[in-house]
Length: 430
Image 1 (tube, rainbow, N blue to C red):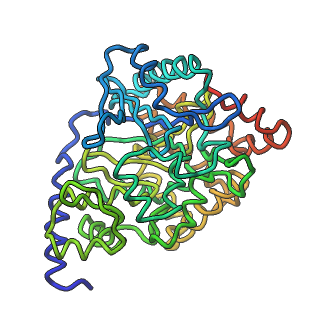
Image 2: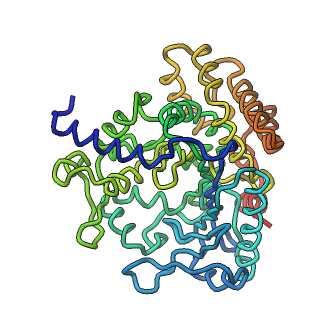
Image 3: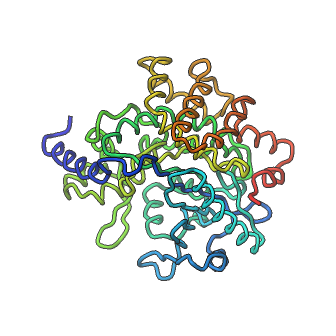
């Protein structure tokens, strides 16, 4: 148990964190935003460089405004507009399309498609392409691939070569609006169900020009980074309340801090910094931003962020988004089902399934008969209750489940038969 002085600091921090979320939902329909990352590749599949595309993207949409990193001269890190933005990720060859929150998935899809098509045209003008795939297929993680942001340099000093892993990965993250009274319940429910998303949406089996042991190398490789704490996947147990969440997060090693205008690498538990400097919410938010559990609360937006899906194949671009929203809408019924099916050991059983699903996709043994079918059925009903016909986007997931083959399993077969050329053909966004 923490000393009384530390407990008081944790309580103050928890109150400030919770206050960033709205007391009540503003709209009957939850809003949904999307952060879709895409590998940028040359004709042979090696990594491109987003910096070459900034003028081409600006020409595609003159309404977008450039954003530069403070204190780094003219390092452009984004092009931003009202509906969407293009953002530089950890890797120079990963482009993030950030789409504003929408109340209907159809509207989100329309904005994303417009932004993605403009990105495709800019890449094609350079002789390059973007992929609907979860990782750089050819170029391995390396310092030269890292975007030259001062913060990233500090993180590299803190994590060493492990940090370079994030220069090649491409996720499909969803932000769903939530209210204050449902924060912990939804967080726990979505963490509990996150292995289903890994099993259905894994799509990163080939990287560094080689077939990996994982269907979702994004998740599988990250789960191996235990020397920095259990920062990925599912945490060891569910949270009891916001104070418990904060208390456990401050025990993780802090990786980076802003001190006197400079980015500084750290390696000590954040609780030591908390005792020294007091309950500064911004410092805590920076710390917890670099704890990458499959689902996390985002105080900056008042959302829950659902993160374990790889970027999906071009034809199934909305599948992971629909699954994530459906998990939120069906959360209470899903928890009831899981607890009835798996009992008191549900968290432990599903945490083990997360690891197996990252490795074997839909070939991994399910935690109980019909698990994924029942989960997907409840997700579909959750979307149906919204009354917006959004369940149509679940079609590819039902097909995957029927074939017992997720995108990564399909891509493994393509790669074995057709090599890198086949992988690039099947994942290229046209």
